[in-house]
Length: 429
Image 1 (cartoon, one colour):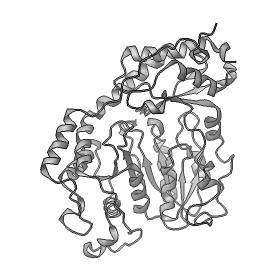
Image 2 (image 1 turned 120 degrees about the horizontal axis):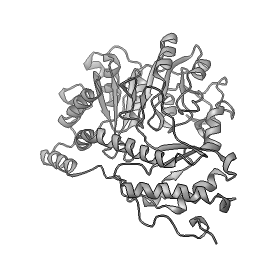
Image 3 (image 1 turned 135 degrees about the horizontal axis):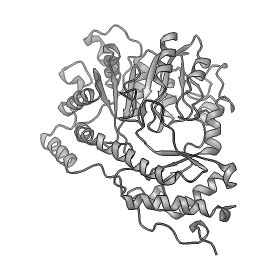
Image 4 (image 1 turned 90 degrees about the horizontal axis):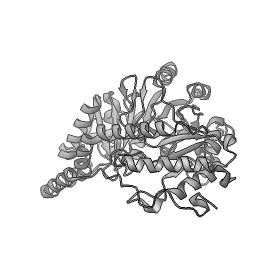
């Protein structure tokens, strides 16, 4: 008689997991004050007192800069917009090359294309999933202008090695820290390790305002260029006296006063939210350590992880069960998260394929129906990042059942499901 739920047995859990509710009365009161003020946005797209936004936006930027110990924080309407601003601010030009990761959300790799620069994919580290310093250096040419590193899943990139490579070749480092707020590298916050750092406030991140992003830097010129690109640069440069017109075609990437007010309250909660993730992961790993075919995530020496998700490696050779089948069995034992029911049970195979296999890169089509701006020398064929391909194809399992508001009883159900499936693998063969 079948025991596993995927084969008709009884599920481990029959109730939804608790929602990740980080919005509370504090945010409601902050929004109410903005509504009462009548000022939902105070930006002007010209050189004037309100070019830098309203009181909530400017207060958020000051508080974020102080919190992270940086000179400048600049708010935008999304982390994607932040990456576009950063790519423009460092002066990318048509034909420049930018080294990017194949194992991340696509905006990290497409940002150079906004300025007709060319993404070049380097492989990732097997243990940490971040860009591999050695492969970065192999991919550098005389056209390379910048590196976009990603603190993927909450793991900081190897800042010592990659920053040294950047200095050696005169490259900018743009740090996509959308998934790693309060992760640390040698005691320093992720997001502040490169020339520009990018944070996300999208609804499923550690803290959020619905949609939004923050850029940070200690460089005065980069900061001002990002502010210009955020807010109609071309309409401002003359009256502001800007003489460097490279990439001064601006956008409307402005954050609203409501979003800024929400984020100010969210920032106060960030430390607790990240600590809860760490505690929950610690509890899970202590109770899953005897499942030999699951390898828990490694943390780079001298670093703290912030666990956007909990990523494990699965040894299919040991189980004799395909990874997909194991994940399906786990999903059958558990339940979705409240407010995210349509997404199903939040355990998955992770990133399913390297970014360079997407049609945009594989067919080299970005603008019009030609290969521009891609050059013939840039290779997006299978095999260019073997470690990434191996991890995507057969090894990783992600889950989100470790977030704050999960009780010990909730976590125990996750643990029980893993053990149940592990003890009845024969049903899956």
